[in-house]
Image 1 (cartoon, rainbow over the protein chains, first blue to last red):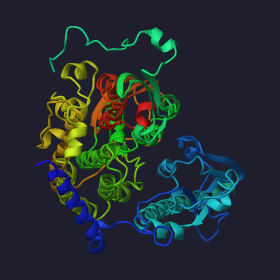
Image 2: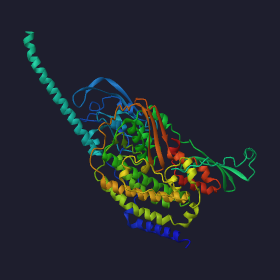
Image 3: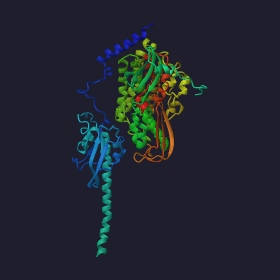
Image 4: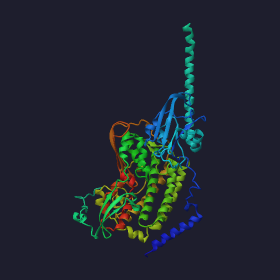
Amino acid sequence: MLGTGIIKGMAETARNFLGSYTSEERLPTVQYPEEKLPAKENARSFPFLVYDRNDPELGLRCVACLICEKECPPQCIYIVKDTTKKPDHTGKLQAHPKTFDIDISVCMSCQICAEVCPFDAIKMDIEYAFSTGDRFEGLLLHKEQLAKPNDHYQKIHPTEAAEADARLAEEKAKAEAKAKAAAAAEKPAEMAVPGSVR
Amino acid sequence: MSATTESPPSRNYEILPKADFNGALDGDVLEVSMGPQHPSTHGVFRMDVVLDGETVLKLKPVFGYLHRNHEQIAERTSYLASMPYTDRLDYFCSLTNNWAYALTVEKLAGLQPPERAEYIRIITAELTRLQNHTCLAGFLLMDMGALGTPLMYAFREREKILDLFESLTGARMMCNYMRFGGCRVDLPEGWLEQAKKVVESYPGFLDEFENLLSSNEIVMARTQGVGRLSKDLAINASITGPMLRACGVNYDIRKVDKYGIYDRFDFRVPLGDHGDCYDRYMIRILEMRESLKILNQALKDIPAGPIMDPKAKLRAFKPKPGEVYGRIEAPKGELGFYLISDGSASPYRYRVRPPSLINLTILEDMCLGQSVADVVVILGSVDIVLGEVDR
C-alpha cells in the first residue's frame, strides 16, 4: 500500500523522540559550556614542555636538539639554542633552549614532535579553549607559557607518563653506573700515577 | 573485469551549439552556477549547469577551491611528516588514508607490520567504513530533503565510533595513527570490550535506519532510476568502490589484492544491478553489514604481541631508491599512493589517486536529462569529500 513506508518511518521517529525522555542511549548530547565530557586519556590538543624539580628554567628537559623543529609538519616550532650549558636529569651538561616558541594557530596537533623527541621533553596537553582576541601574539606561546611540571603530565596521561618516567629513571641509573665505572677505572690510574711522578 | 567496449561511449558535450551560449540566453536555456557556497555540494564545489526548464542539458564540474598543495608539501618534508597531512585528504576516513600511505611506504622500505598491528588496522579501517557510510546515508537523505532527522540519527551512531577513535588515537578525526611498520600506540585497556559493544549495537541501528527510510515511498521515487550509470562507462572511467559495485561489477580491492590480512576474513561483496542512486545507497547499507561481519571476526581473533616491526625507524627514515604504488579499498573507492624514492629523507615524487575525484568525473553523464533537483541527489550518492578531490 502506498504510504506504509512513510508510516513505518514516522513510527521510528516517534520511538526515538519518546525514547529520548527515558533512555540515555537515545540522548547522548550534553549542554556544552556548563557540562563537559570527561577527557579521554589519550586525548591531545597542543604541545607543552615538561620540566622536573619544580624549576621551569633549569629543570626543562629540552636540550634544544632541534629534532622537533625539523620534523614538525607545518613548521610551527621555533627554537634558538643557548650557548651556555646546563646539567640535564642525568647530570650531563647539555644545551638548552634560549627561545622556544610554538605558534598554535599553525599547529595541527599531530603529536609528531612528542613522538620524535628522544628526551621525553615535549608532550601533548589536553587543554583546548585557547580563543583570544589577539590572533598573532595571543596564539604564539613562548617558553614560559609552554613549560609545565611533570606532575601535570602525570595527571593528564598517567599511563604514558609512567612509561616515560621509567625510561628516564633507567637512563639515569645507566648514566650513574657508567660514571661510577669511569670513576672506578680512573682510580687505579690515579694510584699508578703518583708512583710514576715520583 | 573483461567488459570493455570497442570505443568509449560518446559524451554529449556539444548538445548545444556554441552560438546559443554566445547569444543572449533567451529564457529557453539558462546557465546556472551551483556552488561553491551551496549546502548540497558537500563543500566548496561548483557545477556550471545549463538548464532547459528543469532539465539538465549540460553540466561542468569545477573544483580546486580547496587545493592545499598536499603533494608538493609531501615532496619537501620527511616521509613521517606527511602522515598527518593524509588525515586531511578525506577527513571522514583518516585511518584508511593513513593505512594506504603506510602500506605504500612499507612496500617501498620492505617493512612487515606484526600480526597484532594488522588486526588493529583492519578493525580501525572497518570502523572507518562504518562511520563513513553511516554519514553518507545521512547526508544523502538530507540532500533529498529529509532535513536533520536521519542525519542526526546517523551522527549519533557515528559519534560512538569517533569516541573509540579518540580513546585509541587521541583525536576524533585527525587520527594520525598508523606508522611505517605498525601502529603508534597499542590498544588502551578496555578498548576491545568497548568496540565489541559498539559493534553489537550497530545492527540494531541499521535496522532502525532501514525501517526509517529504505522502504519510504518518497526516497524510492527520488532515487530509483535516477542517475543511472552503465557498467561499461563505469569501467571505462575507472570508477571504483561502492559506485562501481552498484553497477554490478564485482571488484573490491579487499578481495582482489587481499592486502593486509583480508584473506583470513569471511565476508561477501554486495552488488547492485541498476546502477542508480537507490542501488548506491543500498550498497552502502549492505556493505556496513559486511563490515560488521569482519569486525566480529577480527575482534574475536586479535592476538597479543608487538605492534611495530623491529626494523622500523622513526627518525632519519630513508627508504632505498625505487618506485611503488600501493592501494587499498577506502570507503569511497580505490585510494592509491604512488611514490618515487631517490634514497633521501623525502619522496622524489608523491602522488595520490583519490577515489572521490575520479568518481566525480562521470557526474555529467549521470546528470544529463535529469531534473536539476536530481543533480543534488546524484552528487550526494557519489560520496565526495572535497578535501580529497582538491588535495
